[in-house]
Image (tube, rainbow, N blue to C red; front, side, top):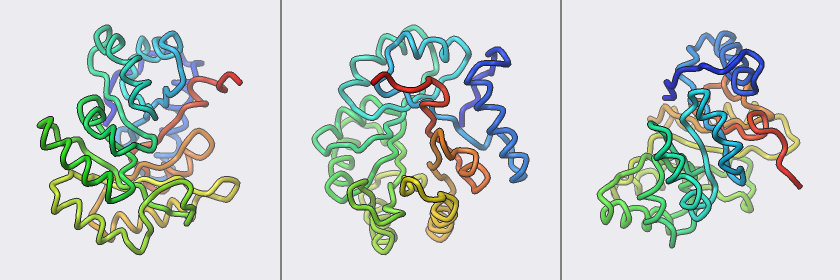
Length: 227
């Protein structure tokens, strides 16, 4: 969990998001330290990321291996304790690079990637914790393991010694996300998993109330992307 000290001023986006997390946790009778805030820094320049690092935040999410490789080595050298999460769809041919670079992978979504990661973990000696992405809204274009295939996929991951710690989802756009978050929670419980990567800038408060342990927040922290 993210335990970095919160030292930002009361009116910063980071403190506002942390306050919203705390409020949602109170409603759900949870503790704020049960929720890891992943600052989604994809497409953001180092100059945009540094203020969050200076404020004590240490958990960040990137979509692309190549972008993360270019951006994070220098930032990690300057700031201790950075935890880097892969939150975008991962190409199988990038599995070895991802295993070396990331501390967590949120987008394990198909058998070919499972096999590539198992091989990469054996080669690098790192067994990076993974979330299995579930096709919660039956939208194949978003990737994800179909709900009816989830149990078999998890069994295959165990056989290959790929450490799955939880489930991840991207609910359909423009639809109330709560039922999808609740379904992911049930699927995780039914499969003996207790970590849930769900919720982004527009719906993370709902996700926290429904059990999210990891939320992926970009715009609410960094502002709208240029263009």
